[in-house]
Length: 181
Image (cartoon, rainbow, N blue to C red; front, side):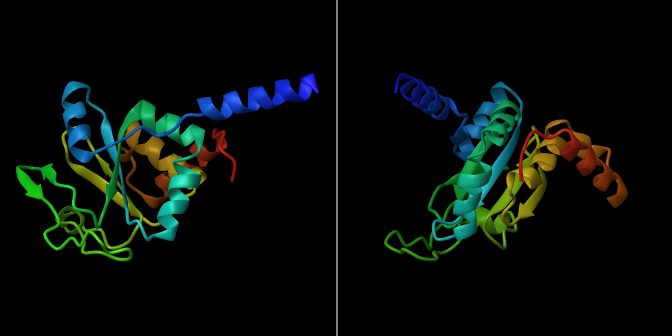
């Protein structure tokens, strides 16, 4: 009985200490970038979106992915249909058509439109100068997101020019990965 209690206690401590992504608003991330330059990873979601919920639980909930994000990026969670005000490149974006009592799809935020988001979830990477690097549409399990995190954290995306180089890069990352399917 004592062994079972000890094992359960250690398990619960492990769960409580598991790394979680430290989410912030876009404006907070931009302000943090000015103090300590890091790239931004932006998860654009909608509250009604099933794959968005999966990505939050399975991908961003993975302790290895959370650690990689927290160590190398400022993480922004942005409701693509919300009414949050965003300041970017001297412009202010909002959602003048936002309907607060809607439980399903809502009007898209102007920033969502500006970024060219056509589906949820969309993951956007932004460099330390505020330039958009790329966006990734759809759900990515941890093992599929990991190569992109490695690619953008180390600026390796500036060196890869062909599909073959990208395929080789992914193989190298996956071979050294501690993530499971």
